[in-house]
Length: 419
Image (cartoon, one colour):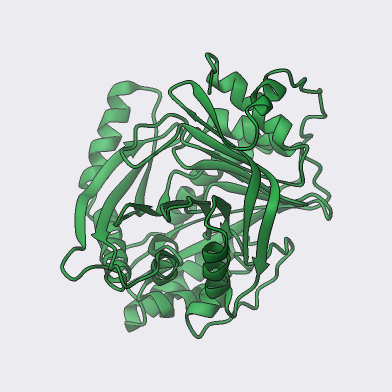
């Protein structure tokens, strides 16, 4: 164990050091208070063993991998694992080609809590190696030509068509997303993540590198966590801008808290998550611990609810993840029909976007985020992508939904010098 008085400087050095390896994962709470968070940040580096697979039998393969290796696992679930869980397909364009499931056992695992660094896997000497590591100056990200997969007009038209499905009774709510992308994109992934994390620090931020694939995430949303026998899910539905004027900012928070449309969107997803957790819960244990909580982040205020349950001892924790996946906040309700319409109206395969990444501990505890407010990058084909979206309901105003998308995109556009 070593005291790291300057946690942010140590974290920066540690990530640059980790990026020398083909595979690494940083999970960063940015020191947000969270009763369910075990560490301020945790860094997994290099590979002892790994599993990679696509839809078909992915969750069972992961279960077998964990049972054979009851060690720390880090990795991700792609949104398109929906096709394994339900009778669904993914046929939209994919320029990133992430595997649909990837997990690894690290050779080195470093955790920091309250300024103290601890090596959980590997030799303690690695801490001195990180402290002595010299960060080489690398090229910063130049101006990128960020394009939109959908024009504003096309987006507005699709929102109106989705509202027709709502009027017909096909769905109550759907999460509809649009892609921003850049081709021939040359970025410094570690530097870009550092900028994103500075501009938009969030409690479930992370950096994940798997060979040429990168996830640079400033997500504020927890998909699912397990602590002992307790499962915790914290869906986000409800967004409002920040103001530099403190009085106006407080008024915006109050307006968000009392906004009937935002509350209706949130409660629909709360009901969906409650239903998903029921599949894995001890009967009668599902409860809403917090409804319509308002949390503030640098760019936005968010409405977040917390749903918990006791895991049925007969249910494997990986099945509990499968039973709740994908996160209801990124689909809509009813869930299966919403996912069918998402595939029909969106232009890009979601892949890791709106999926999840995180870690599983040796004792079966886990914590997974929702991949939103995130840059996805393929360094070999130099394709960069990020998506933003929002909940479409009967009361949605297409123009306002578009504005909300642009608000959610603002931090990433700023980081990429595209504003």
